[in-house]
Each structure stands twice: as structure tokens, then as C-alpha cells.
Length: 253
Image (cartoon, helix red, strand yellow):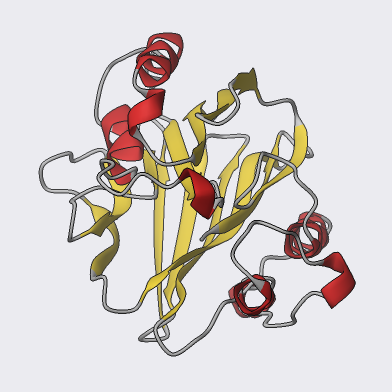
């Protein structure tokens, strides 16, 4: 269960900016973000079980990230990995609208998901529980319900993002401290996603931690007005922070 807050053209400094967390079972092995040997333009982590990914950006300006739509009553036990949805978009030359059409044609084979995808200049949101929408300028959140559903953790992360946007300088330690907020939502504000009180409470914080499941990676990414990308990832299991910088060199279809 992941969470992201992001903004499209929020001010004169940024075309795009994102903060977020990737949650997973601790025993599901994954590689941190890196440029893939088989796709040299792709910067993303890799799920070693299925070889897909959950978030990535390319040197040609494509970006995609995905969360699960949380509703256990809709689970398909033999569904394919949703990590291929992100990977396939980022590693293909299929135009955005055609990719959305292809996703729609296969939407019923997957468990519920939310996908933000496109280029830095042209972003879309697609859910196989809902549909396709172009993302407007401004600040947005993506948790485990539809885009911009204001769960307490989403509202809090959006507030943190706004603080970053109005800061005079970038401080990675402060940003990752925001992403490590373990404050739980009040019982009266918990969503009801059919998983029971204990799990709702556990998953109600920005940073999730339990004996077997929790936040694995945290992210801070931005693209400035000169198409320069800054990508920072914190591996929460090792406490290692890795950063990448590059300039988008052309836009894909």
C-alpha cells in the first residue's frame, strides 16, 4: 500500500514534484532505484519476484507510478502483477492514449489499481475501478482509493508537500522525516475499506511499520523548468539515501 503527493506546475520553480512511500512485505525482495541494464533510459526500482516496478521516470520525460486500490472483496487470486503496468508503459513507445485504451481492454484481469502516467508535460490518471482522466495543474494525492481521496494520511502528506514547495531550500533530511511520520489517524477518521479496524489503523499513517509489512522505500523527485531531474530515494531497511540527477533530452509520444 503506497502513498504519493505530487504537484504539476505548482510554481515558477517546478514542472513536477513528488514525495511518497512504497509499502510492501519485508520478505518480498526488491532492488532500489537504478538505471536498468536492459532499458538504459529507465530509472526505477525492481520487484525481484515479478520483475516489474511501482514507480519510474525516464530520460525521455516519461513517468509512471502505481498504487493498489484497497478493497479485499474485489481480489482476484490469480491476477497478473500490476508492476508490469508501470514497466510496460515506461519501456515502450506506445502513445499515452493508445496505452490507456490497451489498459481498458485488459482492466478486468488485474486487481484494483491506480496509475498516474504520461510525460512531465502531459499526465493522466487511470483506475481500472474507475476510468481515465487528465491530471490538472496543482497539487494531488494518490493513496489506495481514487486520486485525491482525502484520507487523513493523504491530507497530511499534501500539507508536507506544500511546505516543501514554499521552502527557500531543499533539505533531504527534513523531507524524509516528513515521509517517516508514524502518526495514526483518529478512529473517527479511519476509512472503511473492509480490512478490519486493526489493519485500517496500521495503514493510516504515512510511514507504515509492523513485524512483516511496512514502508520499504521513500521518494523525493522533482523536474525543474529547465527539464533537470532530481531523484532521491531512501531505502528504509538500510537507511541509505541515493540521489540521481539528469536532464530530460527529448519527449516520447
